[in-house]
Image (cartoon, rainbow, N blue to C red; front, side, top):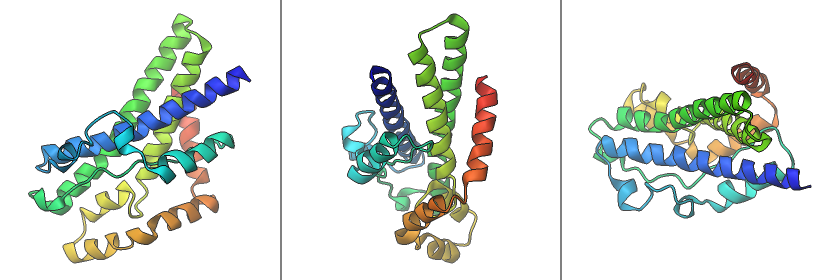
Length: 206
């Protein structure tokens, strides 16, 4: 029982930190590209409270964690971005969007290194579980955000390569986007791809 509780706490910690760093990365890159909105609204912080979205940060990931789902999905309040402040709105919006998955990729690599150190130096088992959770959750969040369906980051990246009018129409389906994504996940459309990625992650870890 204690082990299961500890594992749940670790996965919650990893998920929250992965989501927050993802969002802060968006804000930091947006600021470098000319939009300080996130900083002005107090969102460039690792304090989880300003980032919490009741549904995306608590209810849905909590349900998935408690159900021992192999996949954990969650999100924070999107960092506010004013694309009018960008020199090249579509291009810079795409670069800002890419920053989130890149931040997850960097975290994944760090957790892989931690796991290898834990294994070689004989650190406690919970450290190894922490590292595996960190690597797998960050990989999953990074990859799912690259799906090119608005409002996921992948759609912003794709829009950067489209003519302005086409990009606006493409991004306008955002209000239906999460329904589409959840529908595709429910139908296991991405299972083969994610299983392949987890196999590759396992090879990197072991």
